[in-house]
Amino acid sequence: MEDRLLAILQLPKEDRVLCQLDACNHPVYKRVHVVIINSELLVIGSECFKKHFKGEIDNEIPLYTSSQGKLLTEAERELLKINTEELIESLKNDYELEIQKIEESKKQDKERKLSDKEELNRKIEGEEQKRKNQSKGIRKIEGPIDHHKMAMARDIINKQFREERGINPDSPGFSGWAKFKAEQLYLEMIEK
Image (cartoon, rainbow, N blue to C red):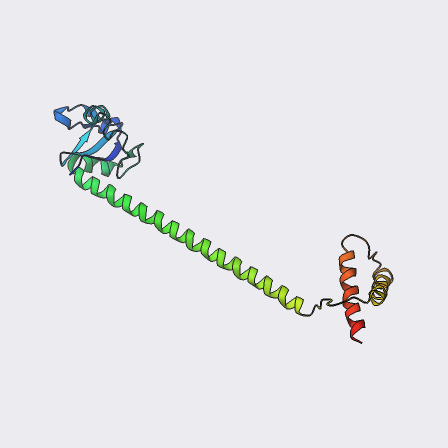
């Protein structure tokens, strides 16, 4: 098994442990490194970690904790002292559960975005269908225009706008509406 940094742990000073690298036995607590060296699970201090690995894996992110280290609970500190393998197994399980939660959250976000996109597409399709339905009753002028009848239609509509609605048909916002109404009246006039 290749040498690996499994975890960086933090302990209160009163719960410090002894570095296990080459019988160092220096007390460590701030940045306790749990590593596999030559297939052996060891708890070592940060200085021994740097000296032993000499840049090989000292920048590596631990497998089961953050680079800042995990502050251990009292139960975890006791487990570190009596059964480091069990503690690492527990950290591994916690890590895998966290990864599952993140993946599930990403999956739910993706599903929600897909659902939102589908809902938006349904709304857009509904609006397009509504516009199509509305435009079915609208007729367009085709062929040559009888300019005399078109002028009559405009005059009638302009008069209606001014007298019945109190609107200037040439003002912005109303000119397009007046033009549309005049075209519809023109189509009715040429059909008769």
